[in-house]
Image 1: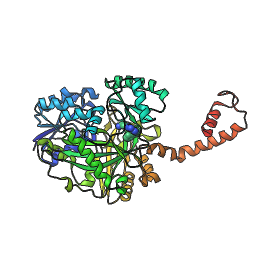
Image 2: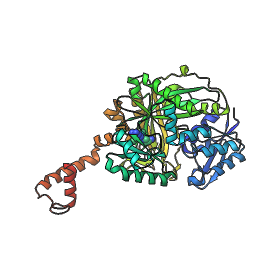
Image 3: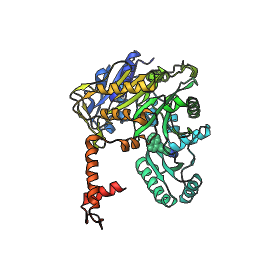
Image 4: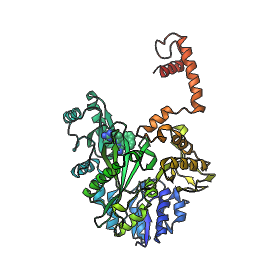
Amino acid sequence: MFGKVLVSNRGEIGVRLIRALRELGIRSVAVYSDADQASLAVSLADEAAYLGPSPSTESYLNIGKILDAAGRHRVDAIHPGYGFLSENPDFAEACSNARIVFVGPPAEAIRRLGSKISARKLAIAAGAPVVPGTEQPVADLDQAKSIARSLGYPVLLKASAGGGGKGMRQVDREQDLASTLRDASSEAQRAFGNSEVYIEKVVVEPRHIEIQILGDHHGNLIHLGERECSIQRRHQKVIEECPSPVMLAYPELRQRMGEAALRIARAAAYTNAGTMEFLVDRDRNFYFLESNTRLQVEHPVTELVTGLDLVEWQLRIAFGERLTISQEDVSWSGSAMECRIYAEDPDNSFMPSPGRIEHLREPSGPGVRLDSGIYPGFTVPLDYDPLLAKLAVWGPARERAIGRLDRALAEYSISGIRTNVAFFREVLADAEFRAGRLSTAFLDGFFSRRTKPDVSLESEAAAALALAASFAQPEPAASGEGVSGWLAEARRNLLR
Ligand code: MV4
């Protein structure tokens, strides 16, 4: 096994990786920026290497600095975690050139799956279902029109180089196609340096379900089942779980989606850990969406139900060991659920809330797994994603996992910064959530169902008054005339 591994990441995933290395008897090297000098990861690692100033481009995204640190500390391998350089094929290649093992898939597999068009083509060639749409970038408006007509509106324009919802636009009618196509390709050019756009039919209120895979360098490839990640806010996952509630009702779906994921991975000559993302519609048709060629944030829920350590397997595979688990050996026990604990303010549009953590009590107890990157006195930097910790629980069934997660959330006590802890307890109490009726539209529905007593009783009372008062007044001829501005607004809102 490796003697020493550099962790080119920070925060909770830095801690997760350093812990795994120690358990396996491997020395760890943490890298850090100015903002992370006093991080938990740095204090837990065997060695630490300073990268430079806080901005990611001068630290965790800087290939030269990371390879320098790896050379100085004489490591055998680099684990990139998620985000930062984890899906950068040039980084994977630069590691190999420096004779350092990149703990992840080969650069070529990252490239094949990195572009969405190329991943789509690969999935089609492998016989996996994809959303109906184009296999090539759109050539011109006339072609786009005829494709959209044959698919039927609404359609989605997606940037080939995009991902995570960036560069995606819905077109509801043909008269909007020309302008949206222009906007989409210029946005894609600006954001990704690649203006290619392709067309897909819209899947209405889908579930987002992903399949975890593991492949070694000896031709063994298995899947570890699904994670349901439908609860997202602005393409940011909020709660993840395994099994998906839909699999509890239709168990054969796991096998069919697992096989599709393996076909795609095989076609990409994939090794190490990876994820194939799918959309699942109301009739339980599933469609390959895109691939994540890294360890994912939500990997703990898979670990809790399968009993496998994904990071351990990533390291063993990268070292060249054989996968000793066959597909038949993989089993799923009970139910796991994870909340992403963020330094953000749910009462202020979920704005990031970095700052110094004054007091901290973290949950623990039976069935609770906490992957945390914080401690009392730590200052959450504003330079990076404000993920503080992942709270994951296991229970013998979904209801028990929900109860346990709520109990663990109730044990949290953090002062000095705002967090989304209380928000999760509201979501867990929601009847639709408890019934497992999930889709990517879940949170929109949740927000419209939710009536926060302290805020909305007051505003509803004001609105009712406004409406009553407004009917005593003549209909405003123009805004602000006859009825005062806020009254007109209230009337418009209530009569909508
Ligand atoms: C879709 C879709 C519906 N139909 N594609 C959003 C992120 C990117 N990975 C793809 N996304 C979607 N693609 C078709 N043909 C709906 C989404 C989508 C979504 C997907 C997964 C998780 C959350 C989402 C939220 C809104 C839209």
